[in-house]
Image 1 (spheres, rainbow, N blue to C red):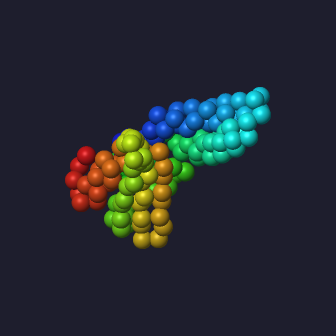
Image 2: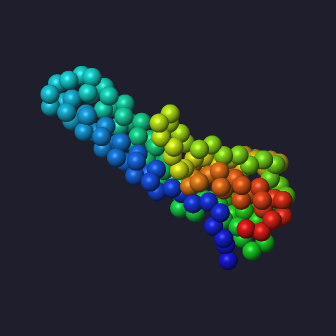
Image 3: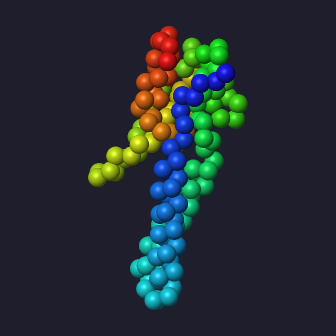
Length: 138
């Protein structure tokens, strides 16, 4: 049985979908009232947020799990032995006025680097993986 270590934060997807709708709304207003700045702002916002929405939907709901042999299971069936991990780091999404509850987790092994976005509580995930590497149980 697998234990979930990291999940996708669903509020991130909702935020980017709402921003995409805002961008489309600005585009429509720019077309209806012939205001070029609204067209420009709407296009930038809609295109940029559509990219994030597409990226969001490519990330699975369970990003990192721990199997019964204490190996990390990543998306697409990737199995990482804890002894092969050389570094784990996290980067929380931020804004100068808002603290978000998701971010990016990066796992470096001896041969490859794995990076996943929209991770819920990524600092806690980093701590859990480092604790597992030190032999602690979670």
